[in-house]
Image (cartoon, rainbow, N blue to C red):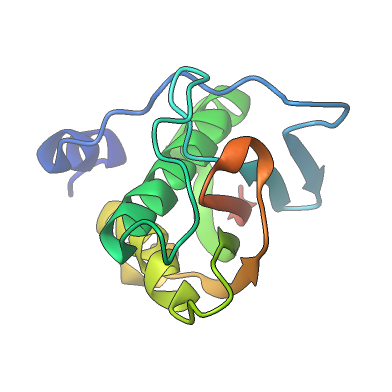
Length: 153
């Protein structure tokens, strides 16, 4: 059976360095077997190279931003858990999408995050419950921010 590290290599997935906090909060908080991960943006190495609102940028760019949000969340999980193999279930993602008032495809943007999780963990473990919410603005003009809830051992 393929390990998670082998699957990541097969898929060409490389985790970035875990992002720094952007304020007075903790990035993870445990409650029993649940681990909550604070909202992550798409910035890599502290730089938001995808900016703007959906409706100005394409759905595909929004999906890539959502994918990068999940990569940052996984980097935090890897750092704090020691191994992503400890993830037993991706319970929920909460996706905030900075959108123009006439943009209504927030769920399609969130699909970028869901697809990465399913590709990595498989449908049973990686397919989360989720919400995709349109918002007026996000920090640093990023288009997407995602919170994550996982069950661990």
